[in-house]
Length: 439
Ligand SMILES: [Mn+2]
Image (tube, rainbow, N blue to C red; front, side, top):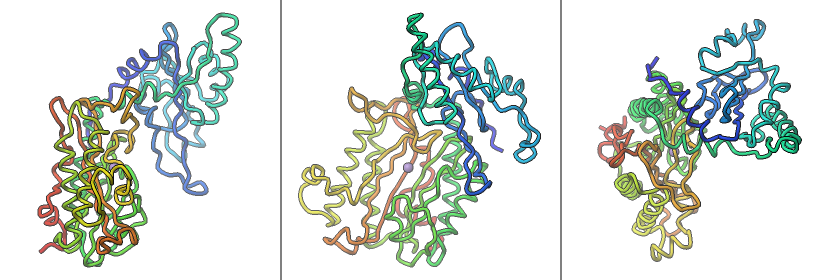
């Protein structure tokens, strides 16, 4: 296994608690999910609960209080049960869990319905995402009702329901060192796995075989597995943004779009490369690749502290529109096309998303004051693309069936950016030389 620096969970809790002066946050664990019958998917913890506690098993509800006096962190946990543990493995005792997490109190999960409302009703605000769990919905509803009577008697009591993200999203946008170590490692593993995947691209292979190479690389590199469903789309499949069937064959003249990322310690990388099955960029595919690469290079060159994802998206979209004009896919002026949105069939998504515990990590692109400025510690993707679905481009039909996306992961530093996936080339010659079919 990979050795990684420990998370500063208690510092994160102190930071969050300081932003909950009159509130308590309620974070339930993700439920165990079933593929069918009693076959469970591998468990993936809830990102917010993990971020604050490190708890990565089911059957947990965390209460984080920002009010002075009482306990800061109370965990409700399922106690060990020999009949259940026989199937899923031994479970920690409540005392072990308290020591492991540094919680102030650990109580049996079975007492949540009874004790939860009392722990919440004295707080003016309850930070809870309604619908997160039926049990917690009931506890919060009862706490709000008790809080109302309490407020009549004492002047304070639960009466506002707020989103935990109001406190946690801004924190999670600025990664600490423990998080960056995991994202960096996920990026490294992903780059190595792409080298293996690219070496397996050649005419005649199945998309699933390339998927297998990528995911084998993730596991061999010590990652938990793929952070999201791996996309390997040959030819026209590359035009479907979330194509995950990976059931087609690679044909001679195809471009193959591969979008995949390893998850390490629950942190994601997210990389896309598009390569020619022949090992040579040429013809319309080569032209489209060049247009997307120009946009990606421009965005990477412009990114850094002070700029914003909004500004990057605008300048990238403009460059892609210029590309669409020189490709002959659209006619008119750049400004008109941007205004009318006629580029959207070819570029329907945004240029960037935040990256972290979630592949599409939560966080703002703008606030009420305007676009949010990038700051050191923020991590995001830069992933322009152009897609020409069948029937989409009567002006130049030979572009139809071509889909190209180029995606790298970027950390904002004090004076610019660090491209975490830069070791995987985007230069067409260098990239194509990694493809199996390349002589
Ligand atoms: Mn992405």
